[in-house]
Length: 91
Image 1 (spheres, helix red, strand yellow):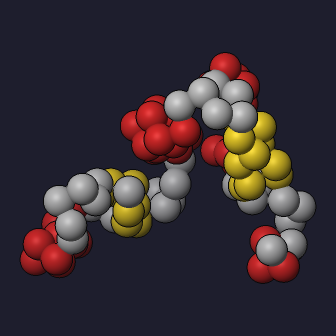
Image 2 (image 1 turned 90 degrees about the horizontal axis):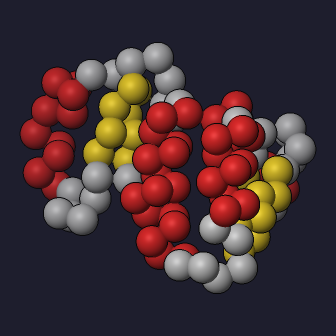
């Protein structure tokens, strides 16, 4: 899944270069939001992981720690590991 900042028109002809399995999303206000992140979890993460116990490393972006996301991850045996601010580049 690739998320662009802006509207669909901005992509132009570039979308033809992506593999058919790549989903392209757009958000006018930011690159990621709660709705897009939950969509990613439901559409890609959970189906790929099944019910395997999983440690999921995330930065502290707001959408990564909302109750709906944390509950969804917990329900599917996915433990979020939130990296402190300013430390993402160290991992």
